[in-house]
Length: 384
Image (cartoon, rainbow, N blue to C red; front, top):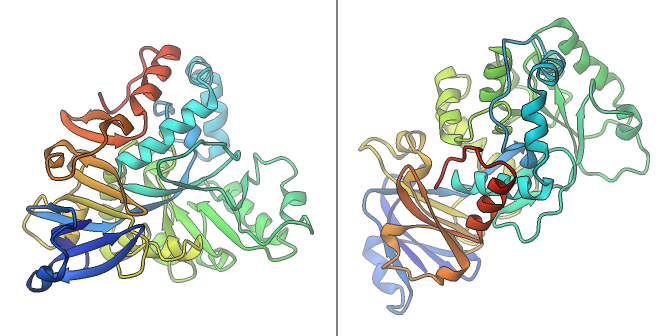
């Protein structure tokens, strides 16, 4: 398959991406496209950008059917949890009545529709049959110092494997939230590899104890009206981007990225690599996170919505403007406008619409949505 006439993010010239089996085997300029065999299936684009399949470093896949839950600005996740259990208990019960596996399936599709081809699940290990994107769960998942039972024993289990420990840290603006980080560092007796999530109250000295911090600004601002001092923390550790779930953040990754960009805590390039090459390195996703020869063909193509630099176009994307998603060399999402160029076995795809723009999505998403509505007929989903 040859993806033609594309602007790859970070490159100025128009180019063509050759995909064979599950890999990118060549990147060909327009002058040399004749070297590609005529029999190779081709998709031609107009005014389109390409970038690696995105890597979401933090989500709770089974929590993405929740509406935003919050009634005020909180001092910490402890305050938030107590408040919603008191005032929103009926909503929580209605959503948790939906089987966990069904909720998790929707969580996978939420990520796919945003151009995410790899998501790191935080929380309970979920059994998801044949997920359409990669779901990474090869880490030790602790909720937090305040909400994880026996966290000290789990962190210091001498028989634990060498996988990183991922934990919510400093999710608050009060003194207790900062002290939780110190407590975690102090009790990391065996110097386990720590990957923190949120870190709103984290300082640059505390950051040195972590392999990486996962930044979830949309969730932070919604719950706490504050976010981490990323401009300081980035000097001491790696910054990865996470969406969190819809219980505290918009389903739309691109709205979250625009919010993050407005903070100017990361440069455009730093924000881009927090979703691509950097998480590929931290999570040990070999040959992913970049478009290059020999890498796995995880590729997203989207409309170029303005005439400025491709990086500006990247941050202006909406989910309905995604034209193609390729995962391991296989098309898993295709805009209806391209169907004539690349006929699909539509029996293996679901036709859905996002803001009236039709997409073909691999798998039986229609069945997933139907089953969800059997449990929650009034639930609002961002597609038809």
